[in-house]
Every structure is written in structure tokens, then in C-alpha cells.
Length: 438
Ligand SMILES: Nc1ncnc2c1ncn2[C@@H]1O[C@H](COP(=O)(O)OP(=O)(O)OP(=O)(O)O)[C@@H](O)[C@H]1O
Ligand SMILES: [Mg+2]
Image 1 (cartoon, protein in one colour):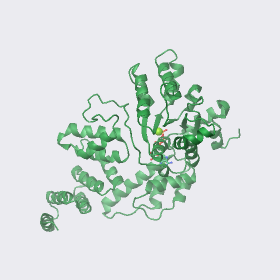
Image 2: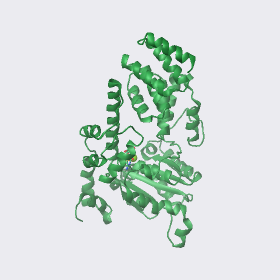
Image 3: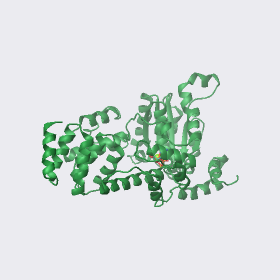
Image 4: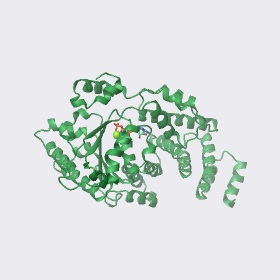
């Protein structure tokens, strides 16, 4: 054992409540890559000073270093809610966000950290942000940083990380993945390639996740375009921005180009018949048709909660000519989702089936809330009791009682559209889901 560590331990034996000494030991352990031991020291320091932000940050860092990302994440969240988190909290948060592929948010957090303390400069972080940044510009030093410049990602998740949704996955496979991989075959059978898929359904049921996983599945790049971000821009520059996004995708093929909240665009058409918005829509349709430049090698996906607001022009062949309902996960899917979410976490024998049965109408996001809250409870417990215990079925059942399924509300309006505005059976899947006879 290192001498310094040995001496510190000896000294602590004599005065176990000497906080600065314990912190010094923890930091020394960190510097010697002994993260698990450091974690122990931070934990016992917390029993003496349970609300000390510095200790918590140390603990979060020690957990992060041991790849205990969800625990680190919970602690960082807690720190971010304190009035003045230590600047390094933002650095750690940025690292965690990168793990979740949230590059934009990560760079925001990193900038926040640097603005508070310039010495927090972090080479690894900058490297990770730069690699995934749009056109390779220095994201950190760019002053007029613009939220709608969504970075090009290389998602690490694939279809295996998305629980259930077999039908939607198959459709995506046949409609856009296979044509991308075997264009000659499709041509031989006279099947046209191109067009996009529009995913619709209640919030939190995995549309965005699935789009990202599609890119991971084909190992392609992934670009998200938030339509409302684009619409917020100055008149005239939105078209330019939209064109840039398509061009960026064309440069990056194979690429999944994902349009989130497309309804924002469609909804505007009638309201904006005489305004600038119409140009943007026409631009969008032209780009999608490949009228501007070829879209070979680009997979176009869109997502919306309100497909009924979308103009029929969007659904013509070659545009969003396949629209897929992404329903709330069924029993089996909920089991799978929970398994995916609890993977790698400390768990004891969990009766997934029992939990799935009790979470009808819950969205994937609702399930995530259950898992997150359970982990927080467990952490709190292990801080107070000092012994970490694994997550069990009862822990999850206890938490889920406090959460209401969020998909119900969506179906109230969806039902009306499906019953009274069901052009050419567009929303039959909703009726099927609700068990209403056509
Ligand atoms: N099938 C699933 N498998 C695993 N996790 C899921 C699944 N569906 C949802 N989730 C979890 O729920 C979160 C929210 O899902 P996502 O953001 O993809 O929903 P969405 O349909 O895009 O919602 P919104 O309409 O609000 O944009 C995901 O980040 C993920 O953690
Ligand atoms: Mg989404």
C-alpha cells in the first residue's frame, strides 16, 4: 500500500471524526485510482455530514469512475438542485450526458462549468464533444452557439435496447433498413426506395428512442431536427437551416435524419397559409422528395403526438408514406423494458411479470420514472443504513403505486380523431388498440 494512504489511515484510526483528514484520504485514494475505497471513505464521511455537497460530489465522482453511472447520475441530479453546486458538478454531469448520447446538453453543461471556473478544462470531454459536433467546429469556443444545430451522433444503442415494439421494428427494417443495405434487390423487384416513416403515438412510448436505435442498428450517423427550434428562427433562415440539415445528412450517409415534432410544421400550414411558414413547408417537401438533391443513403424518420395536425401533403408517396402507431408497451414489452432498464443494476430476483401486470397503460417513460425513483429510494436507504441492498420486486411495487400512467389523456383525443376523422383508415391501429370495432 502507498505510504501516504497508510499514514492517513493510521491517523484516522486515532481521530475517526476528523473530517478534513478523511476527505484527504478519499482524495488521495482517488488520485491512486482506488475508487472503490474512496467511495467507502466518502460514504462514511456522509454519515457525519450528510448534506455536505463536496462529499457528495466526491462520492458521485468515485461512482462514475467505477462506471456506476446511474448512481452517479442520481447524486449529480441532487447536487444540481442545490442553490450553488460546485462547478465540477457540471463537468461530471457533462460526462454522464455523453454516456447517454445527449451531446448538446453535455456541451451546455461543460460551458457552464468553464464559465464558473476556467481551470476545469477537460481534454477528454472536449475531445468527445468535438468528435460528435456538427461540422467539426470548436463547439466550446463558438460564441453564437445555436440550439438548432443538432450534432451528428453515432448512437451506441440498437434495437436490443428498445423493449418490445416488434411490429414497428420490423416495419422499419423492411421499409428503410433493408433497402439501404440491398438497393439492387429492391430495384430488381421494381420496388421504389425512399420515403420516410412517421411514428406517432402517446408521449413517452419510445418514438425518439427507436429513431436513435435505428441509427445504431445500421451503424449510421444520426441527426435530430427539432421542428419547433427551426420554426423559432428568423424568417427566411429556417429554410436555410432546414436545407443545411438535409445537406449535412447527405454528407454523412448512411444517416438517419430524424424530425421530431413534425406536427409543428403541419399545424402551421393552415395558420400560415399567407405567411412565411408556407415556404418552409414547401422547402421541406421538396427536400424530402429529393428534388433538391438526392437522398440516397438517408433514412428519414419523423415523430409526432398529433399526426392529425399534419397536412395530407406530407403523406404522399416518397414522403412520410408509412405512418406507424407506437402504442404504449404491452405486458411483454413492459417486462422487456424493465429488464433493459434494470440491466447492470444491483437487483435481486425480480418478478418482472408481476410488475408488468400492475403497470397497464404505463408508458416507457413512466416505467423509467418508477425505476429512477426506486433507485433513489435505495440510495437513500443505503446512506442511512450504510448497507446497500439490491432492488427487489417489492421496492418497485411500492414506488409504482405513486405514479399515474400518462398515456390515458392522449387516448381521449386520439379516440375522437380515430372515430371521426379517420381518413382512409389511417388511424385504424388506434381503434384496434382501444378495442373499438371499425
Ligand atoms: N420500448 C422502450 N424500451 C426501453 N425504454 C423505453 C421504451 N419506451 C420508452 N422508453 C423510455 O422512456 C423514455 C422516453 O421515451 P421517448 O423519448 O423515446 O418517448 P417519445 O415517444 O419520443 O415521447 P415524446 O412523444 O414525448 O417525444 C426513453 O428515454 C426510455 O428511457
Ligand atoms: Mg420524442
